[in-house]
Image 1 (cartoon, rainbow, N blue to C red):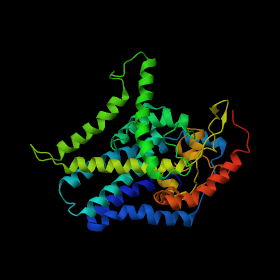
Image 2: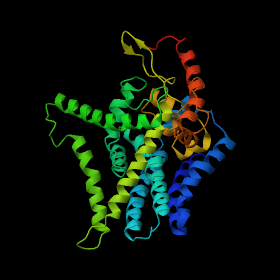
Image 3: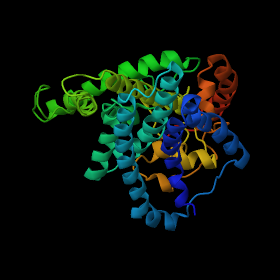
Image 4: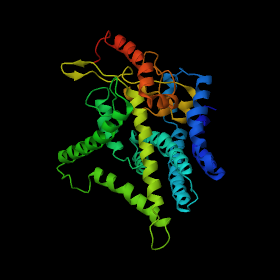
Length: 360
């Protein structure tokens, strides 16, 4: 039964489609579910701190079923993006609140869950999984995340060098500006450095960042061509595509903000200690973890980036969030409330970590 629960995520696109066909304010149906109903259920059911036994973890980690779920999601997301472009091309969304509800709800699919799946796939050695991860990121115009996250964030996490590590007393809105823009330019830097080591020019066709910049635009162009009357351009299609992309990667940055708020690694001889489960916030709330493919067990993910989502562990000694991500995201949008809730927890963590020896 636990294996089937990872299909919970597929309820979100269903709610987006249902909300659209019900019409009007029902376009907010998926939003209400994600940020009202789901947090309530999350708190009611609580957390699960159990881990898969070590001798079974390798077996479970290699089971194709769990990869299959992420493969299905890839095709579902691409299909629903085509459906979304069709919907807006028909002019059926006539009122401003229908547009707002539809686009933000849509971003819960492509960003809230879609980027989560892309993140999982992008960490794997399989060329197919990495390809699927890039396809998902293309649908939200955030393909540089593949480079910046794997080669930048995971190396520099919990240091001031990492754009995606939020600082203590930094409001989300300031964090968003740094993480989005500095993360993008850092991805270019990493890719150019990689090309130089191979003796290639930054203008080489093997520069992934060039393709990552072009592919979302070309994909949007394809959608616009398909869903525009012959000889004209239906501007509602690119408006929809780039608007849902904006909210999708904003959801990603909200998650980054929550996962790493204020946590910094200690230094030894001017170098940060090795990443371990103390260096990111953890949440083992049962229901939201099923929807997010256990992304909330983020402490183990950073300590063991190659581990698959189904075998990530909970560690009691990791800093723990008081709620699951859906609730924490809403709180993060209100900086005074966020600081009131999280600063005492951060200071408690600081008191613990600085009394421990530095990891080699």
